[in-house]
Image 1: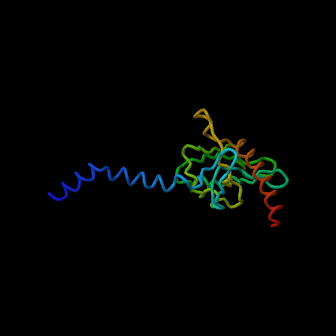
Image 2: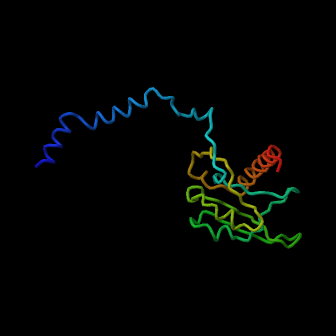
Image 3: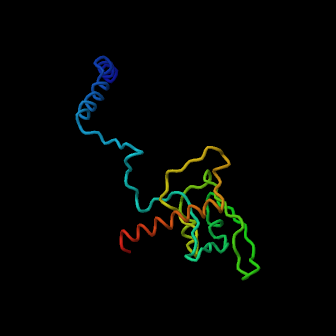
Length: 162
């Protein structure tokens, strides 16, 4: 019975609305913390995992040896690899390396499993696609991103003197 009376008085005097207005009143004269996104960027964590990239050796040869460990360890089954043996030096290389970005959960397991550090997750988070078919990144696309990644890594190393 007393709870009903208290609830009636709260609804009569709009207690919840007054509490909300009190919070609004406290915040209204403080400096806003809004980031103007395209012009200003928030700092990324060093552990951030973004868009994938396939790396190459300095001589231009791709690093991926087609061991399929990244495909096996992927919990979302987002990676598809096909390999064949080269006739020139009898080494195994990939003919198809696809990553479905709709399936990928950006866990980083593929990066950790790779014995030759061929697949990496970059800090690129500003990407989009307009068609559903574009969500599958092919080997060619991943190698292009890898070239950009290598340039950024060299720039970061020169700045940080590593």
